Image 1 (tube, one colour):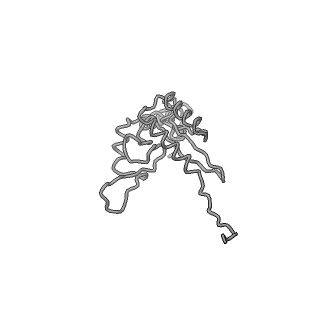
Image 2: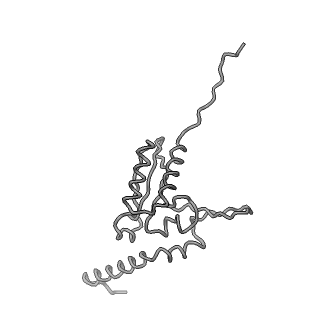
Image 3: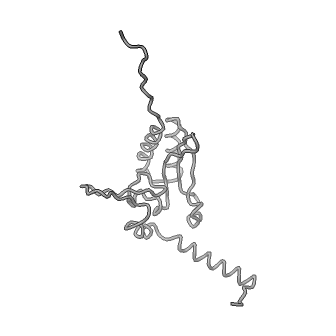
Length: 170
């Protein structure tokens, strides 16, 4: 109760605690997936009885939104995602990637980087391809990322209203 840390003891105690936290945060990807695959807060299961039981996922960094190890953003050391971001009336396309430094994996707030992507089809697809090749991501996700970029881009298009002519045809 009356025990007080000396400055040296406080520093070593803090370092010891930080070391334990970084060791706990650096678990293997397979171990993290084994913990997450049965139940987590990002899983979206269908309540209907259907033939195909597709479990969706709303976790950040999941490229397709499927609950699988291949696309998981939490259980993977290399996170890649393309999503839409809306601030006010402005809509933008955002690319989420994992940080290049491995030490950032122990810091949840700094683990991923978000970068804006150009809306021009040619420049945007080139930017996505360059990020995939430069970050040494899996090349099988490149085509899926390009398709998702196109889908996010087309989701920004608004329906044009059909106007009736006031003049009646006689």
